[in-house]
Image 1 (cartoon, rainbow, N blue to C red):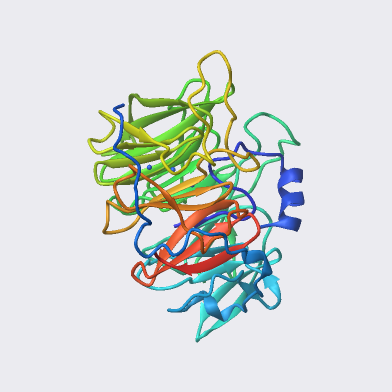
Image 2: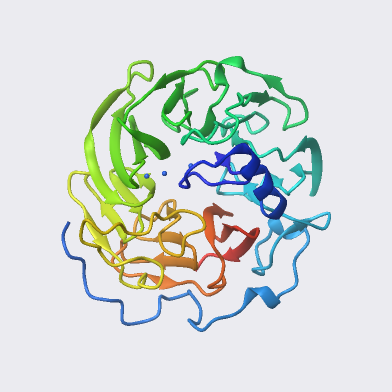
Length: 387
């Protein structure tokens, strides 16, 4: 599993100087017919729908990042806000945490500094070997910035020592494949695939004129979203039965603005600027809905008027979607204004008020067998009980 250092998978890449500036203020990859009527009752367990300003709450120490009774406070370690956490096993809690200055490892009941700093590169943990971490990034896809090569590193001792993997230069590590041992996916604006746990890489361009911004693997299929310079996202499936000879399929979905995704089996959920899209047949047919998401998505805009691009810093658009492990019917969506949950397969959505409406949610992770949610916002990480 990966986590973002100072940026997020579904945003357009920025220059290295911009990424470093952003790290000073905050510390992140990706799987129609009309839907039913609006939900008429409050989703059970989601709490009251009135605002509960989290900004007035005190911040918590680092220790509550492993807790059965989370408070919804911003997490801190040694007085610094936690910008991201890494949870390799959703049955447990966070194993790594990143502040503006340092990477920490949770051991013997305490957060211990690894000696590694936060240099803006993306970190990816090998779920089969939690002490093994990949670290890298790519220059801006739009050609802005210095274009200096960005190194790619490996740690095999929980972030204490690192060595350079030269074939990974300018690659952002995004995901290990849970079905294909040793297979890792990344982006160099195109798609990068490693069959050697990140040591050696093959690079390909599955989209003409599109930059890879999101991906998710399920079985022997890799779903990839690319966004064009005109701001149009396209979803394709890639057969990775043989990772050394991937077969790129035809477009499954094309939507305005940037998009993000999650997958589980044949279910694909795509969060976009104007709605959440869902397919239960591996992308053959699609349904979409924005019922309950009206404040954070835009209504369909007829061409040629261009809708908002979406992505971090925008007022509209779904920035992250997650299907709850073991429960296909419950889906979470993070937006520029809060966290939303659907318990009816994405037909209707309700805002989860334990996350403040003004929080821009860019990642959602599950812990303690789904009892806790770790919610990454542009301001930091909070942990809340699952609704």
